[in-house]
Length: 255
Image (tube, rainbow, N blue to C red):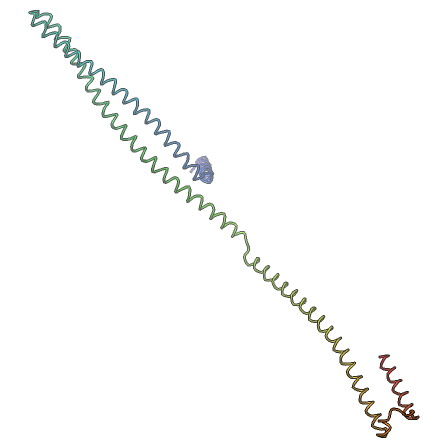
């Protein structure tokens, strides 16, 4: 294989590939229907012309037949008037028109057959056009569905599912961590407040309890009669107790 043949084949293959890739099914189908419609229009014109020719030949044939009949009548008229020569001339004219009529009859028969063939072909073309239009709509719908599916698959192909779901998992872990931290901070705030009030309640209760024990201890050291009598003057030991109690209260207040 020569160099030019190889280059020519490469050029043809590239052109074919370019044309094939540029073909849009919807555009090609619409153009095909348009071409078929133009062919149908031209065929209708051809049928119309053929029918017109048929009608013209038919009129010529009828006129020729009328002339044959007319010269036949004239020949008979001439014979009835004993004019044989004139009758002969009329028969010659009749023969001429008869030959013309026969020729026109053959043309009319051929033209009639041609018109029938053209009509049959036009009917077939009309049927094919109707079928092509139905098939075109179906193929266009399939082509559009295929394009949509291809676009969806391309989008899906561009999406990294593993990476996307990994990102979602990371964000979910981060949200869970933030929620846990928020719950822990709230719990610590509640515990701190509860502990403060518990400390206050516990502290006051212990002081009151110790004070009661101290009072009971002091009262237990006094004679029963003195503890019960409240109207007589206080003794030196009672003053010391009161002083100690007062000091103890000051210490408690300072806490």
